[in-house]
Length: 574
Image (tube, rainbow, N blue to C red; front, side):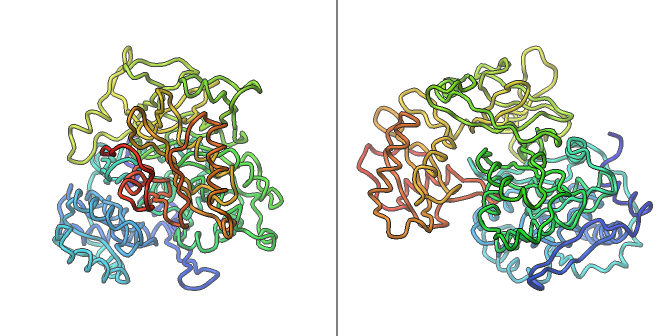
């Protein structure tokens, strides 16, 4: 790695100036969407112009918060900030529903010198800044009004690989958002690791996604990865996908060699919403990789999606499970692109005891999806005492590589705890992910998060296992909208499940549904369910990346947001 990845934008602008770099499929302009494209030359031009404008109000190392909607302006904001050696803070427009508190906390923590937005979002940005909760920036720049003529005034400056590129704020599934310091070396390394793992063809393969650009997976897959080989990225707003998921698949159908990705719920959602008539319009034979990551992976979802769209030419090998986190820029492991997704059955009781033992047909079973192997980095499973564990034993996942970030923004104590770990017999420091996993036959399987473990009578239970049991026990439960967690009890933790009701819950006796859930949990996990709450659609909290926010659900439950709770001991803090 000799040059920062951002330097390749200027390279492609010289070598393939007219080739498409970034295309935004705008569905706000019509049902069929309107394409807006930046060539590599135009992307470089606009990045240089913005860099000049930024330098009028910032110095290298200052922070620039991006409070803009999905679109080409967002891409230019990231590129221009990097050109100017300004630290980008990729966030979102304040009118994005459901995430106001996260925006306030992340923005205040970054303490930006300026804000980058668009004219359509300007009123909401002003209202946000006038609300009194956020520090006032020196300047608000509307990206769509920056003149391209400024580009001629830019004089390129060397960008060091150790320079800070941006602050990636975590989604806050287990704690308050924290700004991960992503250097240009991290940004460059992870994009190259991804492109190598996917074996993409320079200037040929296309990335096509709907993921939000402020999220780590969306940012790297959409903005960074195409820079590696001068490829094209095509993207849309997440809302466009949610409104009509077939739009995502139609976008994929336009290309002969296309890469995409999303969280597990997106595949479940698309498989259940795309009609037979819509499927008849799809050709998914050109899909090389469909990365599945960002939340617990379900073997049943992968099977359902593959079966649903097999008639559209989708290859079974295209579905590519992976694992990653913001502290490692994003990508850590993925399955080989030419292998079908691997779902392995393990003995559930052995797994809760910390061992991965293949299921033999007797007792309880857990099915886990392989997340493959790392590319250009190292992964080890570590015990509570800080020693490496052999294959087959569950422990915390530690990561080391050029993609691993250096620290959390302005949080030295937590940075040392997460990024500064030493492993016996190994050089350098390691990232503690907070995730539990096991290596089985050379591949990584994720078993859960340490902070989400449910410990009842001294036995560990993984919430995602309980959640699967609940959603499969009764059709009144909405799939992938279930949160299982523990609350304090007198002698041990108590299991609580909050689930959103499906359309099939209409007219059902709630007592019957609850009885079915309790019986299934007792049978499959040998657990007594302290409380089961069947709530309305949309009530279970999720992070901005779509993961179930279990800790937020615990707080809401203890605060009485889901109604009266069963009588019990006084609750401790969470």
